[in-house]
Image 1 (cartoon, rainbow, N blue to C red):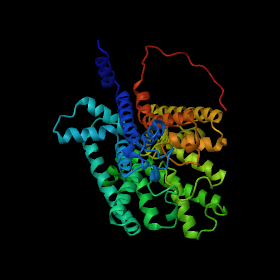
Image 2: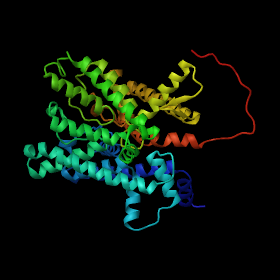
Image 3: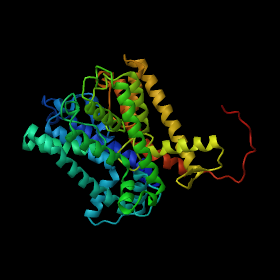
Image 4: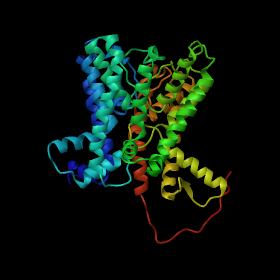
Length: 448
């Protein structure tokens, strides 16, 4: 059997591999385009490592960069980047299904399996309907976001440039990418601007909450009638946003390098935005180099958690954290089952969540330790950068541009794993069931 035929069979049998290969091919294409002289303002070839890093960061909707996005790339380069962001944010299969529908082609079972893998859903029913809903809602939300941002950017940059800036940042925000073309200071000049901070925050939250959640919200009349997944995602999102805002406000209130000299409302807005953007967005209204180490640790925790499943955010996801906390509560109180909102959660789901958390922690630990051997930066900054890459956040403490080629490759690999791993690992684990005709005798292990 020829290699191409074997590869086709492997991809058809394993949707996870299909998605991983799809992301890789898009990254490779983007890397080649960004390498070309037409993509750089200098009119020369961009080193492949920097082009590949930018393409990986865009497709994985991360936002970490080795060259300044606003200064290094031309308008053509910016168009390539935002296209990669839109492709990566919504997923390869979303666009493949759109093309198939426009060409009036039949959606096969294999296509539905891959969509199921990409969207992280629990059922094969309604896959095409979900994709259509995702596309329609995405374009509508991005359009509204661009319109709101244009009220600030058009007066500041002129009609054409202002509209382009509005569209670029609306897409980047909704896809939780964190790429900006405003300059080295991201949205820091607008730290106290409600007209910029709130629309971007809303786009980030909507993109990260999960498509199936607001599909559920629009179809139901009350919180009580929502699906269990939606209840957990919405509840945990609200709790994390509130806790993050409060902690950043307290930790940075008297920091002269961040928000000490700002009016109270600006302090509150900056703290809220920091809580939002650590949920895998990557913009910053306060330079991350200037925040305290305590705030950096809080940011690392929030980045690790990330957004919700079936959205554009990364991290281990809010629902995974919810299951971990609910399991701990059940164990402490001696409950037989793990229950949330009067619904029992299966043991298989809990095992999957715990496995995902453990594997994620191990990966981040290994990569951050490897970086200490090659990069001359404090460990907390390297841990911050690694977590930011794994959770596809994009926030940085100034480490990425100064990394060695080996360090950049490690971060690129981490971004790729963060975008494809959490998306596919949970379902890959759930399908690997090896049923045996016998069970081993029990053994006792002391814990704690």
